[in-house]
Image (cartoon, rainbow, N blue to C red; front, side, top):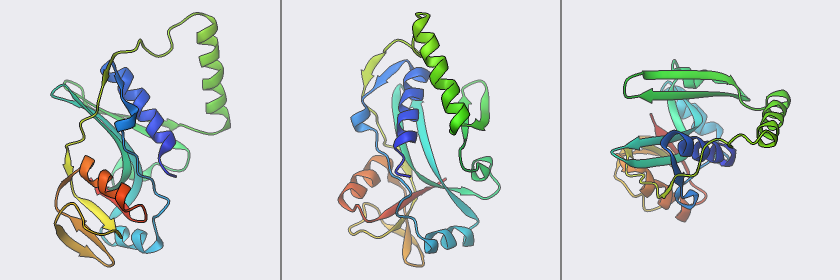
Length: 191
């Protein structure tokens, strides 16, 4: 609910994908524990669904890694992922968009992966990948955010949605820093 499991997964995935060792202290995570029924109604009224999304990107040699609630259009594949299923999307330079969907939690998938990891260790196989260069994330990407609560927003207000607002574009780093100062607030990026 607070995005901690997702946080671990995106750090591991980014390390493997980019051949680095992400400084996890700099990877922000915002969860969905403060979402309200009024928020959900706001999202529905705008044709959106709120999902906890992790992002790992390598752009111009810089890693951007974070976890946050994100508003997805109702018809998008990410909007339809139920309960303990996961969807991972890879957007490659030559491959374009590829998405993979399947069970990501639960009794049997978790047990299978634990046993497989133990077997790999016993057989002396490398555990995922060698450690790469330690890197700090750069979360300068600017997005619009749905925000309810808090004070002194780090961006101008573009729209009012009931008791919440939608900001002008603001960097992921700035909104997460603001959220640390306003822990009772709720944020969701707008995809």
